[in-house]
Image 1 (cartoon, rainbow, N blue to C red):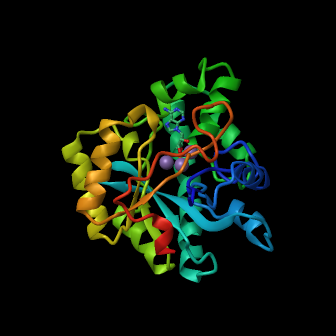
Image 2: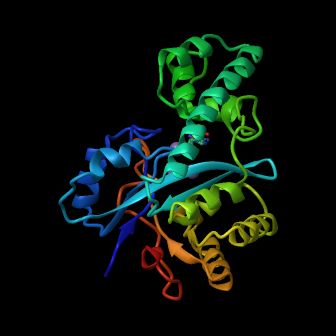
Length: 273
Ligand code: AMP
Ligand code: MN
Ligand code: MN
Ligand code: MN
């Protein structure tokens, strides 16, 4: 049986392990298809892809930040041509957006009574700043107790530090992936706290834009919702993708190679590569 883990993060974005460590984990878990999908960058993938000889089928991947009707939406791109000039430019513009967004988050958090965020961001230099970076700074500087509290109070959806207007429309993100010869995947449908009607509307727009696959939801939401996504995918002729969305060992329920089941009636996304 072919197995896959087509969604995880390295230190090139908000993951805790190096790309080399991720590859070692994937080899140990004996997955076939493996993709490192850092937020808005392929830098991590690039450090392991060149000259890789090993059992994995390494797939070029990325997780693009985008928005749909004012909501943050994540689109995974698989099997993209990382040498495409247009794609490289889009990623450069995402990196710039991340920098601009970080400044705006800092200003908003300062107005909310927090201190030192601008200085912290400046100290990171060229590293694309993510909200988990800022959350960790807030914990380290004693301004919140935990990363979870930082998101619940300041950084999560709808809070002062949730700034999404810099991101492209979801349809644009899908087009960038398609133009680079890749497959656009609707990531973690279980992560959006919205009604099924609204989710269906977003997935319809994703399909209309040329999106070709959807991730099956993870365990806490499996069962009924897993079946729902399987039905929706079949109805819209979407392929199925699976990924752990691994970031860190501090979330033991997300491990490399530990992915949801792919329903028998869905085409596996790797058949589109
Ligand atoms: P960003 O790409 O900078 O918008 O940061 C988004 C990332 O923050 C996600 O990919 C998750 O890894 C992380 N994240 C989102 N919500 C939470 C949360 N409630 N608690 C902890 N981490 C979160
Ligand atoms: Mn992340
Ligand atoms: Mn995501
Ligand atoms: Mn992710």
